[in-house]
Image (cartoon, rainbow, N blue to C red; front, side, top):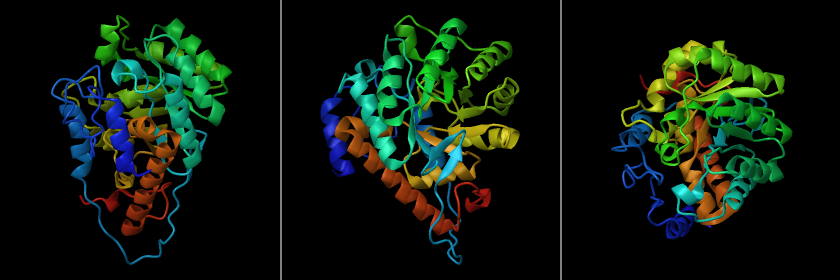
Length: 342
């Protein structure tokens, strides 16, 4: 099935929540929460894409890079390319229920497995979503997914870390940027920020369970350094897809300073506005080790199931390989920043 047909199918199932636009840039859905839009004016959502679009490659063709290496290992995940599917949950609340939650999580995981990548599984205020993600993604992936836990009170966080370990996972994450989610406030389940001491305790609890720990939602070098000092094994540079604060920086704007502060001390993931293989390479040149992509894979899963997820992943891979050849980049494991114009 073509990607255009997949979008058309998805559009018919998500009316009033997501328009499955040809370019998912947040303009048509600005401020639509519940829904898939960005907070307020939607500017943080659209800024993510604009910041990446403003970057230009230095095209280099006198070289011998003909079959660039796209595979890598990051935080124990062996990936065919530096891309993971970001966690998306609560389809009934945010997408009008175009498919059952478990079916969605399984479709995304099966498509990711076929493409040689993996997924993040979600957490939410609605009961059962965390466990459903673990079970349904775990069916095709075993423990090879990255479960995300909301920044609930510490006892519940530790409980869910334990469930992640029981599911065979080797790593888990906390999306700290969820403290700003409107949907959680509407459901009377707000999350809270975590101070350095509490965060260190959570990271230590993860280590005691044999889990590596990733903290998502960081946008400053100061927070990234505090995360490393607290014992986090990785971070995700993220503004939650522009869904939590109208005037937050684009992730591509925040990433270079964060990478300069912690590169080599923790794995660096990034999400936000990544829509092509070229965007993946740009983020690697800015300092990321791996990227996460959410909304486009959600549209693919809703519109065409696991097959469409795998097809979209292959489109990302093809675009990444082309961008690597056109810039003389031999491997995703070492991407020089000077492939981008200054």
